[in-house]
Image (cartoon, rainbow, N blue to C red):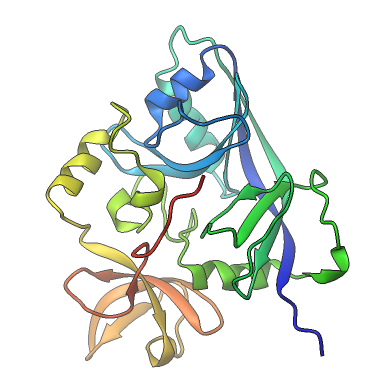
Length: 272
């Protein structure tokens, strides 16, 4: 029997194409990660924050050319308008245009730890060469017979197992604190200079403090009967809430003083 090592599924993403002579400089001034140092073809995750520091969106930034950048994120209802409004808020006398669209991506995932080599693929989610995405029709899979086409539900199980937060689930636009998500190490540069929302991020990092609730990966008996939105109970006391539930794994926000589950992001590496 052949064991599938690589799976793929189509998914729709929100795409913001920012182009013009000032595109890179402007995005660098607005996003939490270092955009200016991206080389053409490189990608990096970043938060787009409110001035007070809460997350509007977690985006992946790809430099397509010297003057063109693509920001893609989860296709969540109403997020398009929220993110566009935020990106335009400080765009005064800036030579850059923002075009919003939805595009289908092919999400390719290694399920056994084997590295993926997909020409044209964009590093995704948990990184480490185990996950890549690409706009549909832009990549050559080489040997498609070795790749199993799966449903979005299978991809969701892998996302949860990887501990990667999703917009609309683990990240609620305008409400979630960056420090709660577990991906600050992936989405924030502490050397890039000023950007809206920086004060809260820097203050929490310098004090070594975390959010009142932090994202955890939960497994085993802890998730029996769990549903997204349901309470996480320890010794009869509600200590958090499940945000995503998969086959054998779940994500949820748990009060920081409660020692259960695996803290999301504790072993994340950067994506380049």
